[in-house]
Image (cartoon, rainbow, N blue to C red):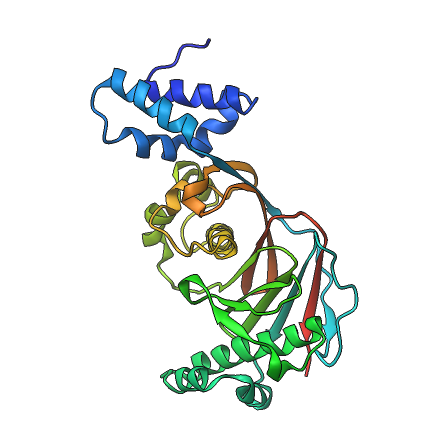
Length: 311
């Protein structure tokens, strides 16, 4: 056995043997989780024994992160079921750019429940009101086509963290996100999560780096340049949207353990309790526009069908 400098490295080596992988490949991904477990323990010997016991008892999830293959955005009027509906292992994403006239947004208002209409009326900014109406009303409208029923009859129930879930969904699951003038929906016959963010010039996101990203992610950001540089900013939002997408897919929602969730390109191991689910998850990043980046998280690595909603 290679010499390990600390009990933490010993624990990691054991974990690697269990996973049938070389120690170096898992060390970076698991480092934060191990540190979290070891931190309360003072005596090195006790740390080694107790941490090993806890470590083996815990289950892990695998995150496979990558840029999406080049997407071809097909037009979809929403008036009929989309072409190329994905199978059980596939996903469907739909993007929509808010109409400056607001006509489409207003047409969706009738699909909202009284409680949702009241919520929409309370937004101070018109852009926020429009995004909420399109996000929630559009979800019913699009789901109606997938389910083969009138949009007005599509029922939603609020899950954890105010996540809308389809009722009587014939196996379909959904998620929605919006930023700037774009709204993005994700559908699949599997858990799905989507997040979109707008590249914001002048936004001091560098203050968030130490709170959101682990050591290897911070190192990757340092190698991408300085905060504000295009490459640096794109990597920041690529990593951020991946974390949001996986936490929305599992239903956990934002957590204070973001630094323990590594979403760099490749295969990453995380504690299942950190993301709220075990198993293997696939996260793909894709551009919604030149100024908007997004990520889709799902369990099956099937094909992704991409559509632009036209009205």
